[in-house]
Length: 278
Image (cartoon, rainbow, N blue to C red):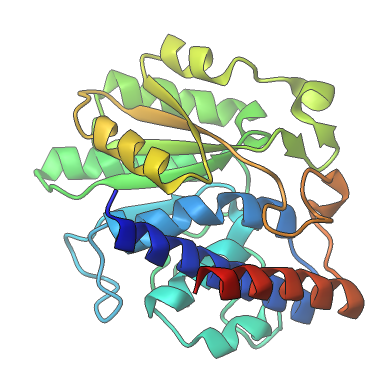
């Protein structure tokens, strides 16, 4: 990976983390843990991979992205704002009644959002439909989606996976944000979907396992995916709450907002890291 690109991605991801904390703190509600765990994946997709244009968010041949784990909307909003789809200043209106930035992504009111999501298990089906449409009409755009490891306990995920392989949707890449925590505890405690890679392989997907916070590994996985003639699942091992010391690997930060003191601590940590990088 180009050194300048890597540094730029690292800086952008930290700025997005700031947006996540500020928005959730302002809303006094939201899901910081799973937003912080997937933000590096979103940063790479929006800043280094996808064919998109913030000035023309409905561009017909744009690549599509579906946040299947829709409760991680603060991560998507922060990345979209950094990418120039809308003013980062509105991030602090998250979940307010008159704001476009509701608790889950809304494709009707937010530039850059390709699918409204929130009901777990359903987003990947929409992504499959987009990929099928591209194949049917001969379009060359690609479709990317991010699922949670708890989300894949939903049966609809596997119906979509079966259909995608049956239709040979090689233009579809799904990331699984494998942080091993969901709202009620660890994946093993709730309803283990392990081994994730073998399950996708059984549905005739190609699988790749990576560190979901390593931009070089994300890049290599996506490059590999483009050489595979079937749908690809990238199992991204991540840390819930990545980048905020007291949130990391802590299940209680799945869906809780930091108070003033803890928000300040989180922001101080991220700003310090940002200063070191710059």
